[in-house]
Length: 385
Image (cartoon, rainbow, N blue to C red; front, side):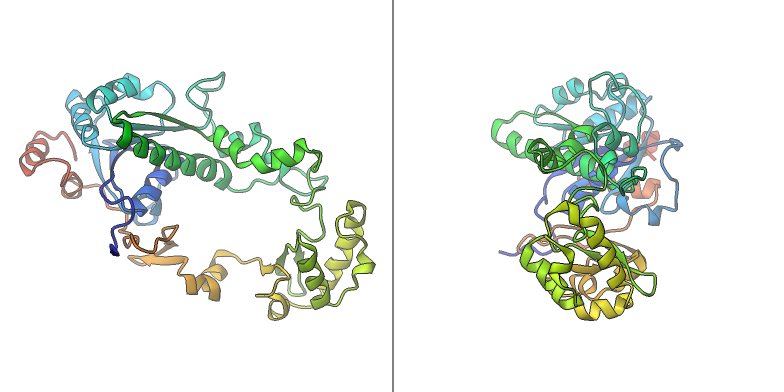
């Protein structure tokens, strides 16, 4: 039976201790899939992250927040009450911080033996750098990823903060929590998930590390098949200054590209011989400068030549395929990516916008976790706001 708007994680309850970076995005991913997530925020602003109006902090969608003083024993007790009724917890502090607050794994698992205690950090819970500050750029540096990205003879190219924070951090934390919740339903026992961004990023590099170990990639940036070394895996400028991405790795797709743009394969030499790549790049670069991006797309897009326009975000919103898939949506007038992936039966709920911090919204957030009497008593005592 189809369950419209519930999502596959309906019934899973998660407590999120407010943080920045990968923690909130992991919580968003789980909430997008239907989990009930309550965010425990600070009474006073932390001064970290990038402050913005709440409606644009879209990673906070699909959940409500309460403000609690985590130095107040009553506040700690309230959070432990929520933890006692949760399937999982998310925290992204430095190692040892939640222990000092009285919300460490031992305390929480004593309150709720089935709890999956999800911890996400850059460096991990142990190791020489565990207590050091860091950001995405540092985590992808130490794992060998940043050095591999960019053009030959140029400094590494910073790939936003997508690879470390969100791919290596958020996704691996969400995956770990889901695995832990599944296991706890069989064993009746919770556990700690140590999601270190450095570990997640290294895991994402598995295939490329294998290629390097096999001698199929060298250590010089911008000289390999997938790092802009090859002429057939490259970005080219068009006559109007806009760009296209070209990626026909397979020989049959490569030949279709050359046929469609009007180039003789013999003039470019053996496709996979890297000695031919520098000259072949020049030939393709000159060819793509002959037409505008729109003209090339009319000829190539939707074919097996593996060519796509390089779009900015505003252009991406309007691309016919992206629009048809409804990959971006509007929630209360704010454009944002739609929840993913999609499910045929347990379809995903329509996202709710981030909620402003207020006593009324906090009381609504606690509904379903605590009784009306408990909520009213805690509100009167000022334990949350």
